Length: 126
Image (cartoon, rainbow, N blue to C red):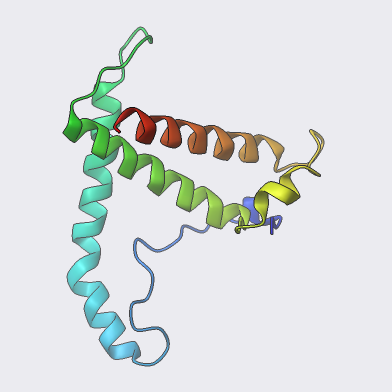
């Protein structure tokens, strides 16, 4: 399902609640001890992407480690955008009904491009 949440400025958590609603105290402890490391990893992956982009554009050649950082960064951006757009596993079927006048259409095109880019990178690493 695609919902009109793209105007909501919320950011999904760096990691879902591991304990669900069963133990909020344990969930808080877990988040306190792990969240900063996860955020640091996301920042490091994003910095790798930026550092490996050619200034003038063109072909990008990545080491195995850089390619893994790219995959992590692409996945992080796709997940965040997907949450903001309300994308679920049915999104491709619903996307077919979205027109250019839909305020989400540009965001959905970016989401599709990121998906293509991620898939292309995965295939090139095989």
